[in-house]
Length: 297
Image (cartoon, one colour):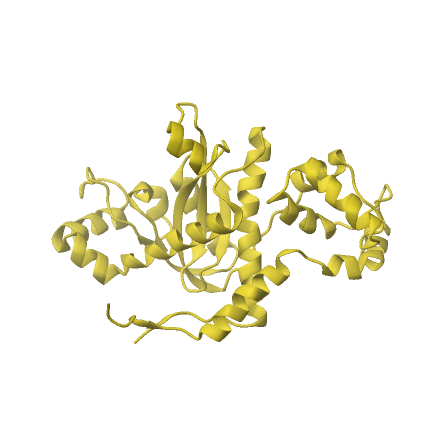
């Protein structure tokens, strides 16, 4: 076996990964509890028992535990005087479900990759699947991701049934003052709505025609047919889409491939929280330690 083509500062990389998990649970809330709570209750119509920043802790915890188990953990933390008060099942459920899930601010100039992955809504586990096979009623949520090609970070995540819906979010980024230079997507994004953004790198579908649709799409179809897939892929840089698959793998290894909620709303929130949590872990670790990407040598 030959030497790897890539070189990495492993010491820095290890510290980055350790820092992600150090920040996974926002323990700063415990240290500043009373100041945060005073601010929360300053103009509130009702008196809160815990500051809203505590919701982030609950959200992270819920990625690993159901609400009843979380209630037990909070009671233990209260008994150890780590938190001044515990919360009941209903309060935690309401806080997590209604939490404002926002992703780290995107760069002003960026190239984005969009793709979708499945999150299982059944928790049989790989052993059950291996022993009994996939059941007919196995169901999945499809969650679509828009990620920064260079920073490898999540910009947005939505549970959806239509790839174009997420692709059009590129236009939303532009409306927010971001300069989106390129949009990378697979054949599912071959639609006029995507070409309206003016930043597409999308392989045309098999039935794509040069005689109809958006002018930019017709031009792209001609170019694709003239070059052939392999040359088109190389010249357009389409190979970078592997990065989104790497992201999917990292999120699922960290937080699992399924959701535990039984209601559709709960499943949607839980699936989105997986990518929200990973995005903030990486963002904060990169801010404190810096990235340690593999460099081709």
